[in-house]
Length: 533
Image 1: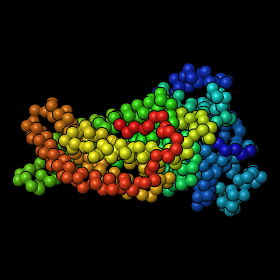
Image 2: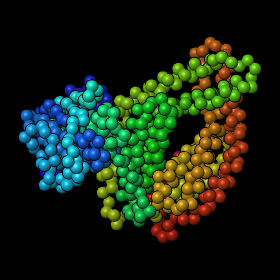
Image 3: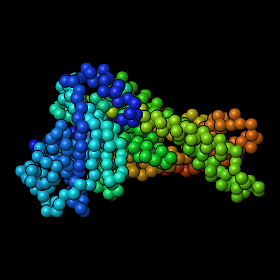
């Protein structure tokens, strides 16, 4: 028997919630029969030179309830924790690996060619207790919830397994996302990008990307411009959510990497920018709810990112002062204060993300977008290319007015222009496949502008951060250091103001080239123009 398996994997971040999760009211309402459990013992096999893994195949033998099952899985994707792959299960009489049971299946020939007559050897195993609940969702989909608690075993190495698998038995894949979002509202869950197979290869020291699912490419192509706007926005925003989940895991794996945190924030901002552009197509209340939640998360990033920026500036300033100020040596007092504050903020933010606090929002938006894409017939939707060209044109006009009227001494307007330019840049970046080639240089100019405006804006931010840092310090040196970094940032701000005068005319020049970004010649404008502020 063969089928395409679709399951959402969610890592459980805190084992203390296991009993309350299994007995949650939501699962009680959806359950179609009493929960039960199994002990699953599984051994994975491959040739001595890993020909199965290299061929994107896996072979396992599993013992459950006294019966053996041989399974071959092929290819697959795991974007956003939604794993989809072809799976073949054959009941067998013993735990001896063989290709013969699969000869008459669609995977048989490929399996035999990969094995090429070589013996299949055990490479690692798993042993876990599985709690199973059969569920029926409000839309009539049938889902098997499996809570796995046990271990991956590779030689003398052991790694804990603690995860939920929501497997679609019948119905629509978006039901998995809906259920995952609902559970993540109450329990500490994180989308699990990696299969047990890949985690086992890493544990066994044989990874080298063997067994790892290849992420799907962006769904946008040149031809996408002719498709219905609602469908395209749904696809690209769901893809954006997958990118956020991927960068979230990168950050969790390396929380001290400043760039990993920055990359996560950028991906969230890209999603918010797309949401803003799609605003005329979305119901008002739903759009407002999603936008407010994403903006709140962006604010959470700010406290950590601002301290990182101050720390980097202080590092530059002390390096310079060591060269030009006689006797400026030793450990500046501000360094210790800044390090302690930064570590505390980073730890707090990391714990929030590691506890799965972002999961419900991401899966909730994903679930909504999957449903939203089907709400209107394609012929009732504007063409994607026409819609984005018209509304990007409106954004660009608004942005140019803001920049032409900018007062560099008014830090609030500097901030607003920076936010506006950033959202425009992120949107141009994501939509690049369907935009004119001429927008790419404009995107680069916008990136330069963002950096300049950030340096100007920092002069207003730095005193606020320093006030909190030194208010409890009795050290005169810390106050001296605060004055030094303020002066350093003031000098950078003046330099940036000069740079702004050089970059802004170039942006105007590039904007003038965007002749294809025109409003429609016929018809009326869409009811709610997207806003950047």
